[in-house]
Length: 277
Image (cartoon, rainbow, N blue to C red; front, side):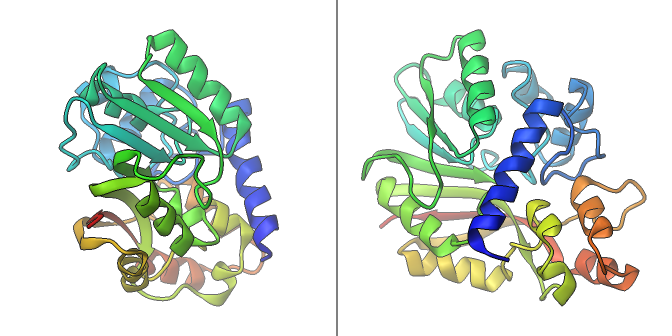
């Protein structure tokens, strides 16, 4: 897969989520999870969001796209500055904004114009003056050095074709002592070759995932200290209620049932933290 082809496919897929309200990204949800709000909320609850969190954000910001709650261990304080890598419709940004208060600030970065439009509309409708959304790629963040107290991301870094650069960029925009807090999909073992080469599986947050040890090593090599896996859970590929990622794998040309089973055994969801020295 060529990098530019993968990036174009990812951008188009997430644009379609906004345009059509279907075709979810990475969350363990039914294929309709971007439809009615109660469905996406149910999926968000499964991956670690509380009823209170889901009730305190603007309607339409929770699209059911994550694979975990990166704010679960965040311990944000009033006045903190947060940067969200791949902010989508703004769900995690609005949750962070509620915690940092009017004296704090949240910057969401996304490369999909349709997502940015939705997020900005949500911010206006919710009265979030402490949140802004910037167009950009997470490999080249449109954020100045030493801006953030925390960088967060939710099931987006696995979609990047240059993950080490993403972590270097995260380190650059953090203040000394700032923290990285991400939820993402990683691999316990290598994927079958046909799945690894599938653009559909890449867009579904599977084929681009790194081995867990390599993922953690990339964070450390970027310059982060105290890198730690805070939680880990299996990812439900191969369940009786297939999610969008599984449908992408099942629908890819040449993928066998054995490939799907091997993929189910490989993919795990993790929450990872790190600190800029």
